[in-house]
Length: 310
Image (cartoon, rainbow, N blue to C red; front, side, top):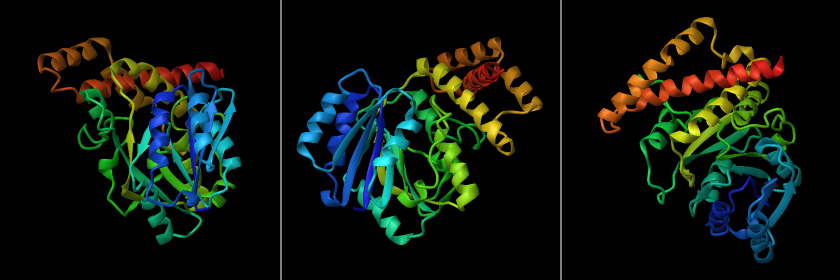
C-alpha cells in the first residue's frame, strides 16, 4: 500500500463528510491507499459519519480517543498506518480529484526517506471570503514580509524546497519510515505550531527536504472571521513559548526590544485608530489593523504560557 491518509478530527462531522467523500473519489486506485480518521473526543455526529464510510470502504479505519489535541491524534493514526507514505490533512480540507496522484508523483521523483511533499491549500470555492480570511493566507501583506498566520504560499515556488516554517499539516506527506523515528510532541495539546516544532526537528536532525507541489490541492472549508482571532492568536502565542523553551535559537518569542515595539503598536488607542481607518475605507484598508491585532493577542498568549509554567 502506497498511502495512509491520517485525519485528526474534533467536532466537524459535516465538513469531515465532504473531506471523506473527496478522498474516496481520487484518480489513484482505492487499493493504493487507506484513510485513517482519529476522533479526538468529538461530541457531534463524527461517529455516525465514520460508520457510514466504514460500511462502504474496506480501506477506511476509525479510532476514537479522549480529547488530547491534534498532534496526539496524529500520533495515534501513525501507529495504525500501513502505507509507505503518510499524508496528513485536516478534517476541514477537501482534496481535489488528483490530490493523491500529485503527492505520489513527487514521491516517485524523490524517493529518499528524508524527502517530503507540501501541497497547496486554498479556501474552498463554496466559501464567501471576507477580508480577514484574505489576510490570513497572505504572509507578505506588510512590507512584503509580514502578514497573516494561516499560510504564506506566495513565498514559495512550485517544485522548489520549502523550509520548516511551511510544515503545514493541512496538506503534507512524508515517508512512514521517517515518522517511525519522529512524532508530534504531545506537550503541544492546544492549537498551533505542533507541526512547525516537528518540522524543525526533522530539518535539524534528519536533514529533511520539503518539496512544494502546488498541484496537490486541498480546499480549506472553514469559514473564519475576526471573532475567532483572540483565541487563535493566544493559542499560537502559548505554543510559541513552548517552542522557545525547546529551541531558543529560533527566536519565536520576541526579545526585549521587539516585544516593546509590539506593545507600543498594539496600544489600544492605536488599534482603535486603525479600526476606524478600516471602517472609513469600507474595509479596503485592513492589513495593518489585523497585523497589529495579531501581535496584541500573541503577546497575551506568550504571557499566559509563562505564568502557567511558573
